[in-house]
Image 1 (cartoon, rainbow, N blue to C red):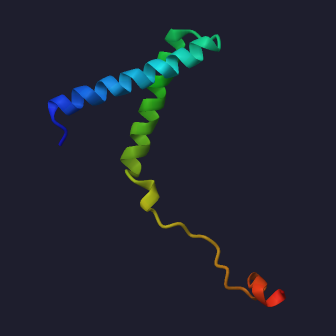
Image 2 (cartoon, rainbow, N blue to C red):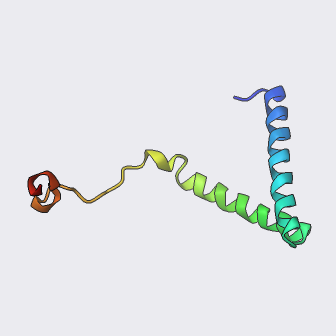
Image 3 (spheres, one colour):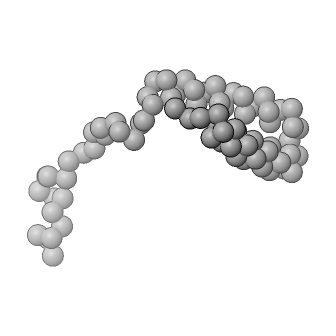
Length: 77
């Protein structure tokens, strides 16, 4: 578990990143209030996705096999 001092440091780091994101979109002409509302939506979606699958990188991916005769390009050379 993260300690209070580590949590405070992480909070500061995240705040800086979020401030940068807000500044980037405000510079493009968007309202700060709208950006903050949309960031809230993004976080809510991320929370739902994380609850469904905390580590999607660990999922098995069903990729097509390359064991069909035409897949061996070495034999064609």
